[in-house]
Image 1 (cartoon, each protein chain N blue to C red):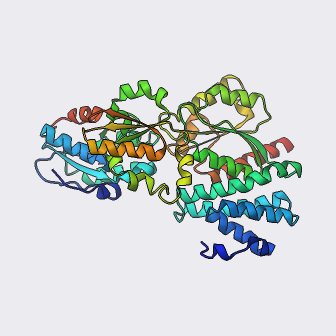
Image 2: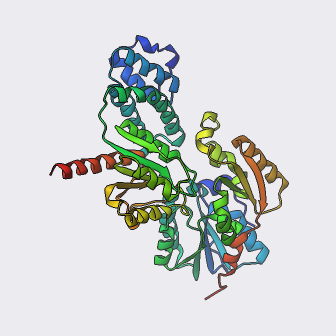
Length: 233
Length: 217
């Protein structure tokens, strides 16, 4: 995006210049620059939540739009995500200390027999960026992993991911077990992964199929808003 | 035998010849073109014609179902029968449903790695091999243009861990005895930082499926 990267001294930019520069650097996947800029804004007294939402999340939102529109491709998105991860690592401990808004709690993991985690990791990062606390169970999770975590924590959402046609039916095993244990209705279940589709999500009894990380965030927000409305009704 | 480049098979696929005496059209992924043409030749299946969709749709399986439907509708008046030489291939059951709707047969199984190995064998060993990354003859020959460059690994080697960090080995499913391809497959595994295993599969269930197509109605 910018060819004059070497000429820019980030600390000399005003806040009004630095925030769009962060968006550019995220777009270009420049992790070190992102980390430096996050520290600069924090040093200038910015609240961690504002750095997260105005600089990083907004930057990733632009990346997400250009990915959806075919302008950016997977490698560029991964580089941007890696850069955001650097910024998030600085902000995460500070967000808890400064009482940043918390939208909800989520457990996420790739299902048993499946080791693919790129999509899951993107969803985790974007959910955290949106204000969700996310427990990532990693890859190759049997039903017990999901249920143990749900039963031992205070969660609102279960997210499951699969990249293979052979592993995606396992999501139904998890949901059916939740039904058997009488805990299905306590959680919003979101599913995603390349071979899935909306019909599959409905057929296995998930609340929603999310085709990408941005949709997952929006869907999670909608379900949390509904939940709060029901509780306040 | 038809000469067609790897690049064409990856990007565009292959058009049907449309010539007599072909009465059966095999509609396949471009990644299977060489194997299917070899089977035509070995078995003297002169009644079969081949058309392929772009092999690169392996990476975007959401395109496959509509692509198959378009070709079936375009050619169904020209042949006695159309056979779809795809397995599910990441379509999440949508291709199977579409083939049933169109009244055409397809190959059983989740993907080509499974039917090359034999669906029964693959299913029996799949659980123990979830950390295997599979390559076929075609995928070895196009490895750089198919995987390495589109994944950005030629420009950003730091992405290697994000892509392949959970894998442990490359399983090269060899359809043919080819020392050059085997050496290249071994090199692919080394570049990915993974162990290498070569497994000769031949044409597996692909051959069985095509042999099961009746010569004429």
